[in-house]
Length: 113
Length: 116
Image (tube, rainbow over all chains, first blue to last red; front, side, top):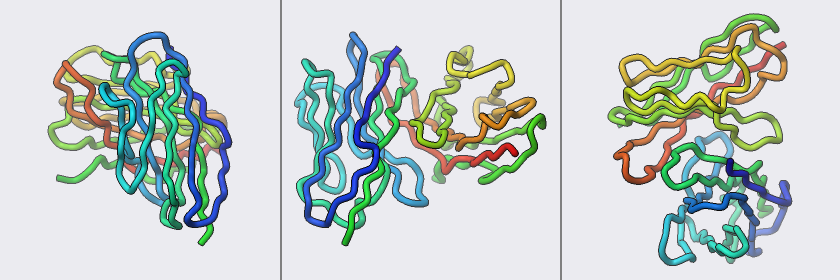
């Protein structure tokens, strides 16, 4: 079964700072990779995804993530955060051909104005 | 159309009681998923329905948990003889499914279950 690790559960940073959230997964086969975001009081929504091709993927709101197969990682980045990026961020994985998602425990990010 | 809806939004129950949680998927979505989000934990897969196929129940934590999907649309998650460790947010998601590729899962707002 797949498992997903996210570190630094609580992240506090100032506006304009850069953000990087780590995500590592364990699964030997081919995977699809995702970052979901949950803003306060809102539904979980997809931020970006990687299926194949260019390992650097761009998502909404200036977020990007890089898939490094050799490191089993899919780290999320944003060069300059805004107060509105305060949210919880979840990394998720599913094995090709299996629709169930395995989620990490999430990163609670607080951006201070 | 409308997104995934869930009811109730909040449920408080006493230990030992049974509860039913409801999910209305996006119209036309053939795949439906239940996940559980406990405090400090990520989302934990519970069960997956796809069309008329037998559901994937491999994530259900115990035989107190069951789910059904009627008419390929609405789903009900039932927890019998609730325990305090069942307290969590129960999330439902739905997606299209063409059998060939992964399709984005759209999540509902969740039901917050508190077992006293």
